[in-house]
Image (cartoon, rainbow, N blue to C red; front, side, top):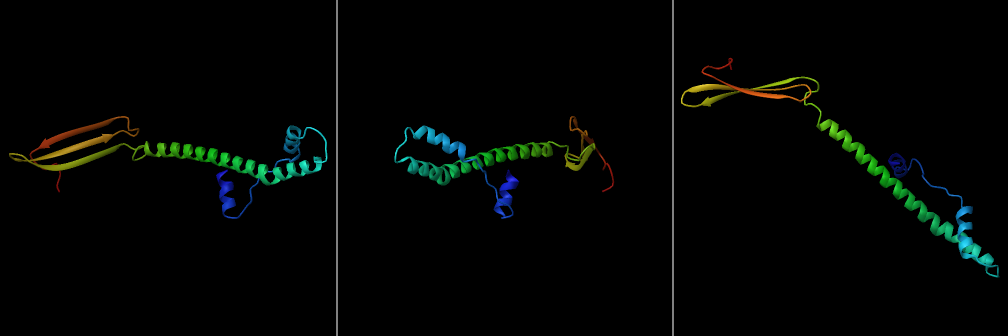
Length: 140
């Protein structure tokens, strides 16, 4: 429905809902028209006019609005599901990630500290460790 509305907005296509006017006009006539008289022809014209100008356009507008609201709700649901999958995906795909953070700690004596963090491919387990040494763990 959203694609149809976009095409209509861009002027590529035209969308309308065609209803058979015989059924609704006969239903209206059966509710209003109780007995024959001089007014019968005028009443039939009024019923046809009411259907063409008022009721048909109103029903089409309400139906299009309801279809648009349903399509919008479905599009939001699909977007939410796709976004949730992207946000909850592992940061590096199906790879294990190891992060190393070397830092120089100025305590009483100069010491090196290194933090390591590893994350499993499914992000189900995370391990963080810290190691202190007196010399640099690697040449900087």
